[in-house]
Image (cartoon, rainbow, N blue to C red):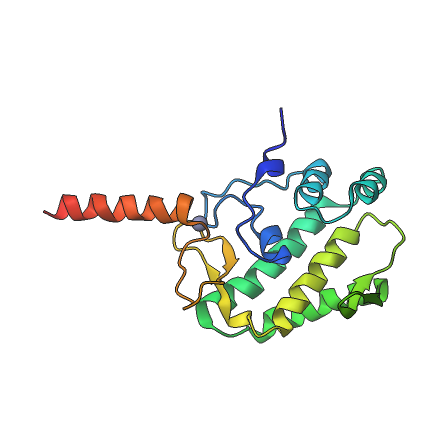
Length: 194
Ligand SMILES: [Zn+2]
């Protein structure tokens, strides 16, 4: 059977947000964990196309690292961006924790020349934790971008997403799934109230 994480919706609109969304829903007690073991991480990394197929093949053959630490890293990102989506600002404590992560990641990074100029990337050598370094850089790039105020949490499932709508009023991670569910609920409640 195909790993469920390999078909997971990528509604975040930004790498680090899709990584945070590897829990089915953020309602306490209702979320299904997709990142249960290292094989799940391998499947997710391939699903989001983080590496070329060749690079992925080399990376997935590396020894496993600690999946609990991967989840702890994800949850640190979740609290940082979830707070931001609700309050419109970062909590200093969350930012401290993220700076601690960056401190560990930066020694593995370097400036790379690309067609679009310089960008910060990670060293070429394969390493089990390379996806996490790239995700950390993705979070850093989002934090430094002018789109930071467009990080929202879905009104139905709590997934985080980048609102790229023109007027910034998107409320659902996905209009087809969560949006229509909420519309159906609203319809039901209106009917009930009559
Ligand atoms: Zn949703």
